[in-house]
Image 1 (cartoon, rainbow, N blue to C red):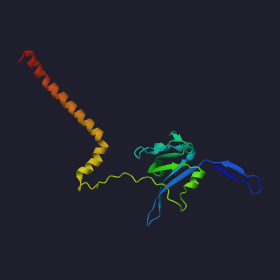
Image 2 (image 1 turned 30 degrees about the vertical axis):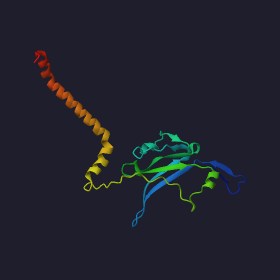
Image 3 (image 1 turned 135 degrees about the vertical axis):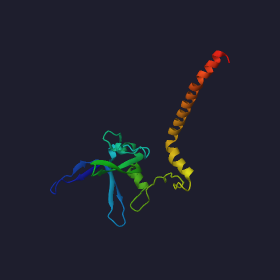
Image 4 (image 1 turned 135 degrees about the horizontal axis):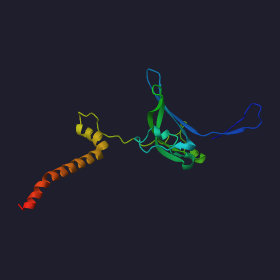
Length: 191
């Protein structure tokens, strides 16, 4: 971003300062009776934007590491992903994950902005589609099999299949080793 301002009241010419564009997002707890609590913040430099995670499960504090891959939003003009909010934890002295946000950012030219204005009482911003939430009730006593399927099978499906294959393989190997001596003796004696 290019800023022009005078160094002092008596300066004749304006001085140009180049500063990086930052987007700062904050999360606050909106309490009704008590004061609002600050939960976390996220500051993104748009020319060196940390690449967002593709899913919320992959979104963690490693995204904000100095060695994390960066992109220039002014070159690619559009990005979408998950970013993590961080907050300083007083007791442990470390940063903790205070929340996650899914966002889509787009840089448009001045002509495009004039053709399709948003904000400031004009039109609403283009919101993301609503999230795909399961239509099941998580009250396990109402529908225990559906809750079991949603909670266990989706998360651990491949691990359970691998464990079952290993158990069947071990049982087959054990039964083969158990019956192999009897069959070899029958074959040797031709009985």
